[in-house]
Length: 130
Image (tube, rainbow, N blue to C red; front, side, top):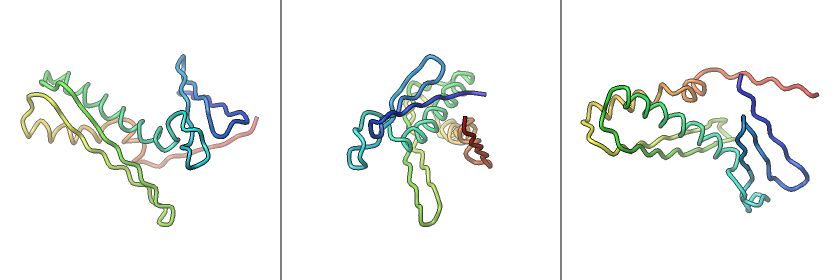
């Protein structure tokens, strides 16, 4: 199981997040009382889907030997609290010598990334206090 640790002190809302040997900062934007020192939590959430998707696409295209030079993705995160719905929209852009059928196949493969699969199935969260 992957373990992520996070720490916040008294400073509003700057959080240090660590995974393995890597560290990043999360914060809220100024208009929400933060200092805008890093990704907001919902941006981290959307970026997990973005990075997993394009890594999966790169692996697939490389395995197929396709001439895919560059992949860009834009993920939009929208939370409708009143309707209790979260919407994620992915927009993919491919650079390289790909025909329409290869692009369509990559669109299908995007749904095979582990984060996409996780989000499409029930998620259980347990909380304990040390």
